[in-house]
Image 1 (cartoon, rainbow, N blue to C red):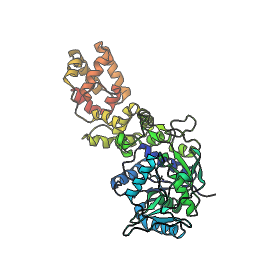
Image 2 (image 1 turned 90 degrees about the vertical axis):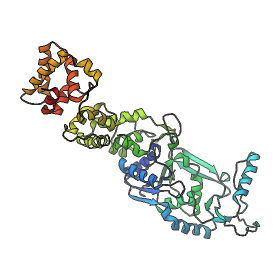
Image 3 (image 1 turned 180 degrees about the vertical axis):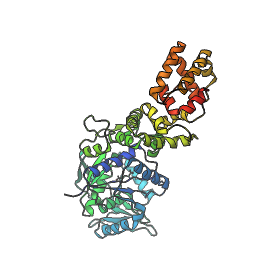
Image 4 (image 1 turned 120 degrees about the vertical axis):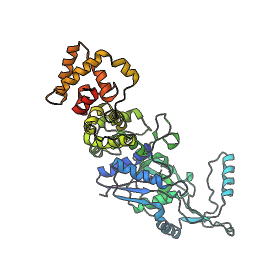
Amino acid sequence: MTTVRTRFAPSPTGFIHLGNIRSALYPWAFARHNHGAFVLRIEDTDLERSTPEAVQVILEGMEWLGLDYDEGPFYQMQRMDRYREVLEQLKAAGHVYPCYMSVEALDALREEQRARGEKPRYDGRWRPEPGKVLPEPPAGVQPVLRFKNPLAGSVVWEDAVKGRIEISNEELDDLVIARPDGTPTYNFCVVVDDIDMDITHVIRGDDHVNNTPRQINIFEALGKQPPIYAHLPTVLNDQGEKMSKRNGAMSVVQYRDEGFLPEAVVNYLARLGWAHGDAEVFSREQFVTWFDLDHLGKSPAQHNPEKLLWMNNQYLKQADNDRLAGLTESFLQKAGVSIEGGPSLAGVVALFKDRANTIKDIAASAEMFYRKPVPSDADVAQHMTDTARAAVKDLGAALAALPEWTKAAISPAFKATLAQHGMKMPQLAMPVRLLVVGTTHTPAIDAVLELLGRDTVLARLGA
Ligand code: GLU
């Protein structure tokens, strides 16, 4: 049995977004499921649009999501000699020919074809055929090299997502596979790479379906068996448009910076175009165990930001507090908040994580534990009544006398003070909150006091 080998082959021409990285997740999962290999290849031949920053986002994004690759990253720009070598093989075997048609002449031809209502295509005028007399090559012109696409028959493949696809060779004109300066073009490089990297399954976006018959013909010209193709339907944004940077898609690493957990994003992406029954929340291991090409969706998947937030909350709830504390601390640092001298951040995180959608939310809530409490005048006016002040004083004394500082001990001290002053819980809890953390919105007051510690609480209550 051949080993499954898949690849992710992004072009670093923009920051990869969720839709793009899903094209890494699925081949990764397929390789892992089959104990095969996953290869990363950076398709950086578009020199004008490729940037090192975009490469960085790819590498960082994959690392963050735990999409480890067994080979690579390979950079196409570093493989030019290899492409030239294979080009020579194709030339020697008579599969390519020089074409001297100028860009202007080609444009004019296309214009005429369109005017006649035909599909614009190269007319094969420089294609050598037995008995055909070719024009005289113009002086001083460097030709492009065109691939001799078969004239008859059709290209057929069984797409693992879309089913059988058949494209007549009549639809395919002779593809330019090398530019006048000899540099190879996109479809050719992809084929050489997929051959050299022994790729068995090409799992990629269906924006490449049109390239596939051309690539298959090149495979065949090189005497190689094409891989199995699985073309994934597009990911739409929440507006129902194709997800793209141009209409506001965030880069993958921005999700990290917004406080999403990588395992939540992986789980979310896994479900964006693939299903295992109605399983929604599942681990990376379960995903790898279950993943196959048979349950890939056939229609476009739509990104749902609300669902992603919900998913993140599912993972925050079960995440280890120390781990979350580490992540939360970096958000606090960015906000200029130091946790030094404050309560245990892991304890604080535990109070907020169930209701938070992101680490950013947790950090925003946690701040109250590490800043000097500065209640608003309006809150003070509303809650710090004379009766409240008197009760706070008595509460302070009761808290000071507690044998131990735990929620379980703090709670009865509250109840006793309330009874003593004939007050309801909020009438005392609100002023206490204002004094100890500066805001009326906090988790349960006994938990807050426990975390802050007795010394801080008594000092802030003025006891
Ligand atoms: N480089 C292509 C892209 O980013 C993918 C090519 C492929 O997967 O074959 O769209």
